[in-house]
Length: 433
Image 1 (cartoon, rainbow, N blue to C red):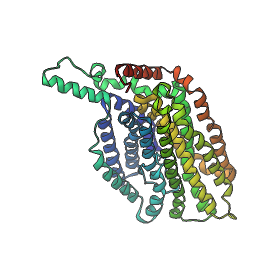
Image 2: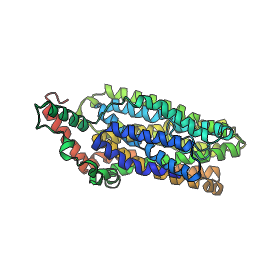
Image 3: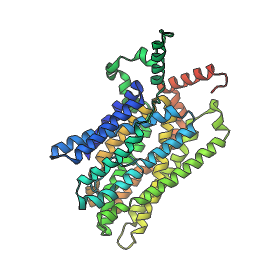
Image 4: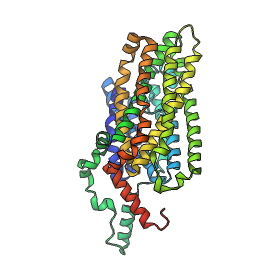
């Protein structure tokens, strides 16, 4: 699993900038093809070394949607409300990217129904049918998804302009027209340009991106630690089978659905508000961060709930129910903060998402390695509470961004560029649209 997550660390750093140089469609289809073929190869791997190589390639291919899809939604939806709904649905219904490891060590690169279903599928199939069937099931899911992906159109504006300019030049009437990418792009040499390092630059030089990435990375690490903690709790304390222990993640999915419903209602209220109809006073903090402010305390309660109710003299249903609250809280945080990044950086959203994916992958790969030793040393209650203390500190961050977000964006070079482009576009349109 660590080899798989290495792809998630480095893949988005390359794919997100490439999608802003060559378009979203080419990157999306090519990386999904790599993931699909590598998953099939992993299922057929004859040796351990071959399996590791194919897992690395699968992780690289599977890492692209984490960052590129955010850019696609930014391309399609001008309205922050519509964009917010699409991002919320995307991160909730994401399908499993890997089912290959039994439930006690499975780490999936999203928070949504994919990672929640994976421990159940792997825990129930791997012990009886063998580990290869976990890959075959993932391959079936990928194959069905590929059918729809083939029809994905290009959405990136500069790429569409370049194609239009080429058609006009071929017609012979506008031989002087060139798209922005045509005048700046130098082909594959662009890989060596600063733009390809934009995710890393944003991660270390944009305070907003740094804070958001750190918060989400900690949540991701905790989520992955749960894949090790849940078997310790439900198999160790309550003596459940791996299949039944995997089913203990289901309340998180129900919580995700509740969070989506809350997000939809929140967006509806935004549409009806006067502020959402006045771009001149538009502030991303006011629109996007309240769900994250609410989600932090909810997540905190759920973590302490799980840690201090997991005892032999307390029915398993009580810690089981904590997952429902956890699903609501974490999903609200992800919806709020990721939408905040998309709104604050618009055309650079793919790079911002790539920075977030990279940092999350590092935490997701490293933190689960300490689960067993941590729970053996501190016990279930205090080990889980330690995770809660980390969330307690980070839950302050959305409130900090509400207070200081405008100041931080005013000092940001990227945000200043985006603001100027928006003002120029509004000045050219009589209606300001």
